Amino acid sequence: MSAVRTLSLALAWAFSVHAQADYLPDPKAAEAALWASPSVAQARGDYAAQSLRSRSLQQGRDEWKLDAEIDQRRIQTPPSDNFAEWGLALSRPIRMPARAEADRTLAGALNAHAEASLGEALHESGRQLLTLWFDWLNQASQSSQWQAQRQLAEQQLATVNARIRLGEAPRTERINAEAALAQIRLQQQQSATRLQQARSRLLAQFPTLPLTEETTLPPPTEPGFQGSADHYAEAVLEHNHELFRARRQADVLQAEARKLAQHRSVDPTVGVFYRNEMGGNEHVLGLGVGLTLPGGARRTDQEAAEQLATTAQSAAIQLEQRLRQEARADFETATAQVENWQQAGRAAQALTEAARLAARAYDLGEGSLDQVLLNRRLALDGQLMAQQTQLDALAANARLQLDSHQLWPLDVDADSAHAHP
Image (cartoon, rainbow, N blue to C red; front, side, top):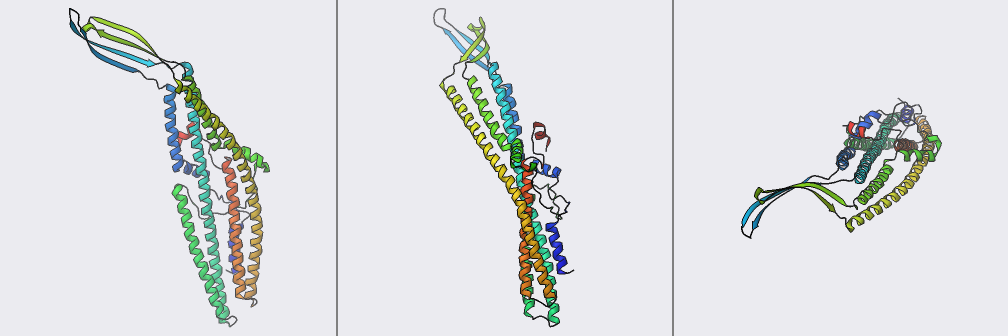
């Protein structure tokens, strides 16, 4: 195979404009890997625990209280006597309807906050998966490039040896060709090491994710969303779990403030009691009512909760503004990445053509080996740069789809939270 043919195959991997293979993980495999990730597993545990706490809050935490007493009655006046006496009392605080409603509201807010936290953990795991995945793709593509360059260097060394045997080139050119081949072999080994490290990092976080070494990269395309950063920002905010969690946190604090406001009222306690007195000669059965009078601490607690709720609402508004700006910036970056890839591709093709012409001239006895090696190195740098910009553009577009929930299922509800292992 000629050097030109080998170089053409290497470029075809990086600049294929008709690639049909999917370069992203299978959606079902990705969804399973995300739900099995450590951070999501912890968030699922927190969600399950919060569901139990909310259930107890809805049922009420007021419990029955049983009191028992025993005493000795001593009568000093004649006829003096001693009597053993005892008594039992059963009582329970009464949760008023307004307080019960406040507790149910707080329980629902806590559940919604835990659900939003689980969704945020799922989303962050998706971002981490994309980062590790594209790092692995980048190292795989570079390894492929260095392998192709090694084949070119070996063929170049064979051409130099042939010319030396024919007396058409000095022996010093063999040294230069061997040095170039040695450098490329070193780069290939280092690239293989980086590829293995990237693979290990990916599988360490997502061990169930299947990896396919033969991945063809498609050409990056302009972001969708009607070509508007504003449309994309709206799509992101519609599904952003970080914003949901901030809003649910404000709801929780507001619900706590309402609950504390209800606790500023009098707490009634109702119970029954029985007393056995005078050694069993007297029996007392009665109904008891107790009232807990609230103090200033309850008012202070309510005011603190209201202040925290107001602060949380302001933080959620500021977060929405920041996320909107970040979404617009991400959209504009993804658009610019496509233009960068197109420019880098044109530069790489020009450098590759220059390298081809230099190699062709050398084969015909014109030019020098140094010029061939220099042009080939420049062409390789151009190819690696174009390859990197291609991956950057694909990664940016994938991030847009992920953040707008168009890549993998990231929405969470109570059923899905308990359905996944």
